[in-house]
Image (cartoon, rainbow, N blue to C red; front, side, top):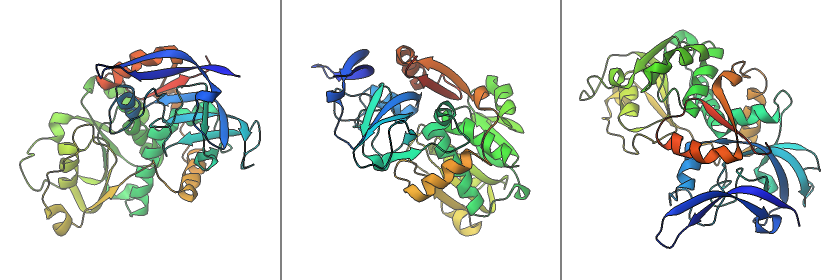
Amino acid sequence: MTSFKALLIEKQEDKSFTRRIEQRSLDDLPEGTLLIKVQYSSLNYKDALSATGNPGVSRNFPHTPGIDAAGTVVSCDDNSFKEGDEVIVTGYDLGMNTAGGFGEYIRIPSEWAVAKPVGLSLRESMVIGTAGFTAGLSVQGLVEHGVTPQKGDILVTGATGGVGSVAVALLAKAGYSVVACTGKKKHESFLKTLGASKVITRDELLENKERPMLKEQYAGAVDTVGGEYLAQAIKATQYGGTVTCCGLTASADLNVSVFPFILRGVSLLGIDSVQCPMPPRLRLWDKLASEWKLDCLDDLTEEVNLEAVNEKIDAILEGQISGRTLVNVQA
């Protein structure tokens, strides 16, 4: 029986959680129609929550996190894929309560997998990963709601994070003027490398936060953190603009009046990449591999092996990671 290494999270009797690299067997994997040898994964904030036992993400232990995986098909019971096919898996239950990409093999329902589009390597697909896919959905939402580059600046909150950094780069590539908001002003040059035209601090965004409305500053916004930052983005969006919402690291609460919605016609668009239906999922991956393919993927990325994931989990929880962390599972 094939054995492989994986990051294993275990719950202790005192309700604490430990994490270490262990040898696992294919028999340890859940049932599923598709067996994949994982080449790359990536680190997301949700992975760190899973690795520390957050019950809103993972409830069953021992467990292997990793909500992203890209690799080659070993076997497929329903013939949806053939041996050797290169596939991408993001979303659904991967890495939550189904063993995820921080192991050298995963077994999943074949319906969760996407054939890797021409134009992307497996490595590039995981630099994008769930974070980049979510950013893509956010930018696509702005486009579909008529927010064009000619209408003005687009605000991106949490701009140095995984979703935010890719959103900055995608918006810049699509011709938008991007205002990047971050708590890490030291990374201003990094954000401008990605295409931001202006960088502001969190404190600047939160000025006059007690007001129900702010000066119309942005044609739209991509909010990745929630809470008062999302509220400020909504209040500062111009007439007919759209704000997308995909994160809650600041807060899950939204304290904002109805004035921006009923006086300026602002739209708030929720973004979910986990259960995104397959037809739009396939279309967006194709777009990320072609007209929206980023030239700056290496600038976004730090590559680590599986053994280094432990310390990166601590770093992302402490807000010490910028851009994307690529995990070379086979290294």
